[in-house]
Image (cartoon, rainbow, N blue to C red; front, side, top):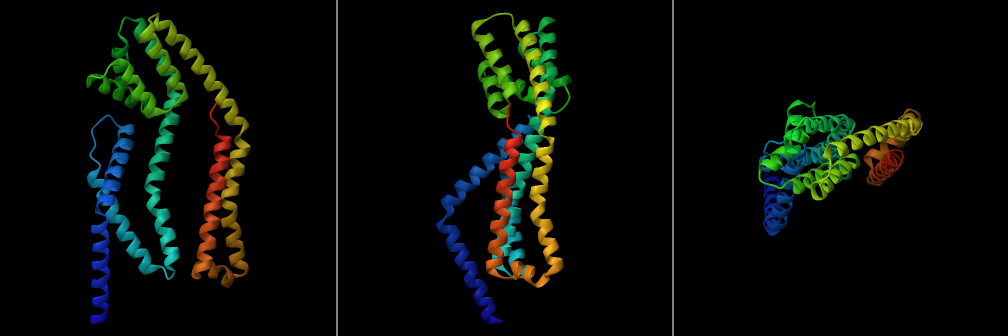
Length: 280
């Protein structure tokens, strides 16, 4: 009992020394994670957000999960692999949610540009028309117009406001809108005509994208099958020869092979997915 307590105290003291020695690097990583989280949340809402508490909660949950997995799994290598996969899931889920939101904004953009043109044609200024869209358009594009209006209200000029929205959204269609608005702001001209022509172009581009999406439906289905095929085959082999499959989960070399196979499966799936989802 005393030996176990002494070992635990020694491990705790060693961890404390490591943390103290790496305190600057850990603080830098903490600040980067806070900045990343605040930037990601800011993409979803115009309201201010403080991510420090949430990053600390994430750190505490990650350390607790690691200790739990090391205690539950007989293989420490497998425990580390599972922990790494689970630890990166929050970022993956946030990025997936953001990509889904960008897709919805992309679908709503042609109609909102038409309404923007109509509002400006009725006599409203461009920034007032953007504020009006932020109040009346459906989500999520309404939030984007609110963020643009808030950025303007904080004192930024029109060009930097539009450029900031361009960097945040990274949408080709919005890049066209941003370029048209910035050029019109610099060179002058009839902004209503510019917006009307842009809206017609965006509708035509959206029609082309839908045709490509239908044409690549079979490829997307094949990618899903390719991703799940190794897991299905592993299950079939487990029914035939369970002890052999069990060694993959209990032996260190088996854990390494499982990890390599999972990484290769994910890389191949992502590569193929990017091919069938190429931007037009």
